[in-house]
Image (cartoon, rainbow, N blue to C red; front, side, top):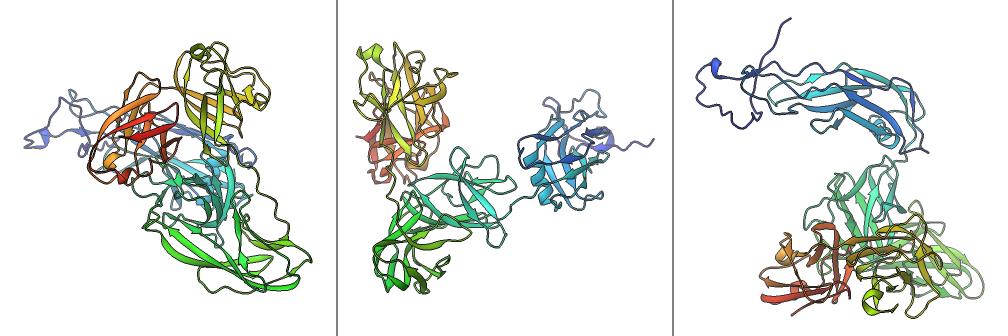
Length: 565
């Protein structure tokens, strides 16, 4: 059997072995290459079920080929030197394939129904039809060495249909709450979203691909589907946003609809209800009515960022039929005709379905009562105060999902509960069964006292929609973002629990504001504005207005405030 030797170029040899002064072939180190790789996996027919997306569909495993031998016995090759890639193909020649990168030293891969179906969709498999899937391992040890392939494993698969036109708008917990739509089925998703100021979100495609921000400072409208991606965030103005996400251009845009004006047989300014994502105008005109609807906009994109002063002014208008409105980004609007009922009624534009917006004449439901700004916490500090007092609260940070966050100085004798209003002992949330001091489920107007952890400072995160609570003990507090420097600088605790200070020097622009990071964990950070801290928000408003020079930054985590002196 002929053995091929490969010169070890472009690969790191273990420290302690330095090759210098090679004058002939005897000075060079060679390897016989990668050992044969044996691939195995499921051989039965695989029928993918859209109702069991997280079920295990296919397991692949192969022999350890990470160890190679060298021509010099006293030289040790690095561990796990071989880099393996799984190749999936729709044909035995692998001309139409997709690659799955595998971490070095890993020799197994498990694919769920969701993940495998996504790969099959990209490869052009027909939903509902059984077809062979070809799998092999491609192994490399250096750029100058040809890769080595395992024998091909063939598995029969039947994929399910993927809706490639609907993009699912996810909240910070990755729960789908809205939809965007790709009218041309080309990866460009559009729709109207009633977004809160600095609202965070993700987009998930039908094949399971999740898009977020590209994780590069100063590029909030550039998108990425990599594992390091962050969530997107809207500008600091709540309102109606025509949102476009383009997976081809790798950008998204937020067009704020500032107002809508009705002209023609009916005139007036429409009002927007963000919760219902509807515009309305109260009137009493009857019979056949012809109107025009247009308004002003502000565009935020990759060039403007979330800077309000840089946002691009424009116009928007609606046309088409009342049962299927069209939208144009020009001052001229088409005439819309509809039959109005007698008496008083509301003209309503419903923007919830991105496949087709509608105009109707009816009764606009009154806006739902929004959540209160604070959630009171009582009993968590009775070991310090001597009783149950309404003296601590968590601040609302997500209005839509009723999430509250803040810091509690806990020293409790009997546990605690959350209360809706100050001095209201009726509307409260207690602990459900199978909960712990650090996390668990809540019961509205019921449940036991939540057992308190050992005394100390804790970040508290509560959702009154999901009925959950979570506490995280505070070990350290840092600030970041000053002068656009995103390294972590420690803050010093004071004698007052929860109060931290730092001497800062303002010397450059701070375009994204200062944030306070707990436990050096970027997932637990406070931002805010107007002197108030909010959990999981962007940096403080107004930091760029600070004069150059020294200041003292003080944060009171328990009171939820910050200040510069």
